Image (cartoon, rainbow, N blue to C red; front, side, top):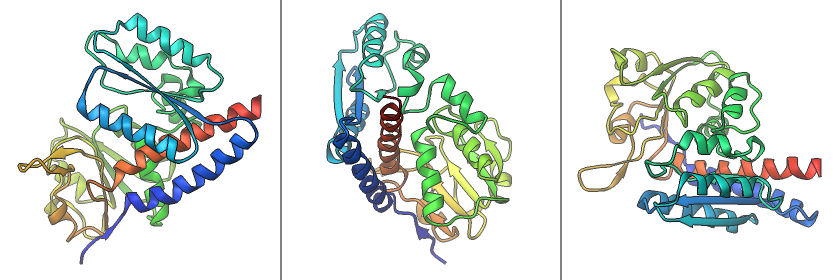
Length: 285
């Protein structure tokens, strides 16, 4: 049995078409959705992400501004710029690309973003609201994963789900969204004693630790859905995930590839969150 591939590129195209329609409707009413992206320093991976985010906005009818700063930018300088963007009515979403240079406190920066413009869903107000099932914004990567489950009609009610990783960006919010959908959730991490004992019982596994081959075929229950959020390089420098794809696809029922799985969904959900922010602002205008 070979797993059904969950194609993030194909699903992204469908969702982006809906984004473009909603963006056009808002623009026609004089409320063109706007996303501000702020990049500090010259991290090559961040450069790629930022370029893709700006292009995705332009391709789907959103306005996008990009602020690039040298790594020497002061924390105060960055906070001042965020304050200006918070007060700019043309901007509905603010995204500060992480990681930031070491002298800047990323927690302080995230908290400086107005919660109603926090399209990444990282602000404490949004993280707390997610905990109670009432978030303004869902973090983009877990939100994208939920859309993948929905598109492939993966039953989550009563399912055993294992999330490998406990980051604030993916692991914790992923667990919250799965709980909200009715799954029984186990969060595993670097201190988990017997990872395989948990994953072998799981109907759904989301791997999000940034460690190659953390999940191998012998650790997966036949027919399980496996979502690979990891981004790593193999020995040949080729992009790969956290899952041993070649082995696991022979056991799993559904699986996401890397690249072309969760990655495109993350940027798509950023657009969806920005549209939602713009629609809220237009409704309150």
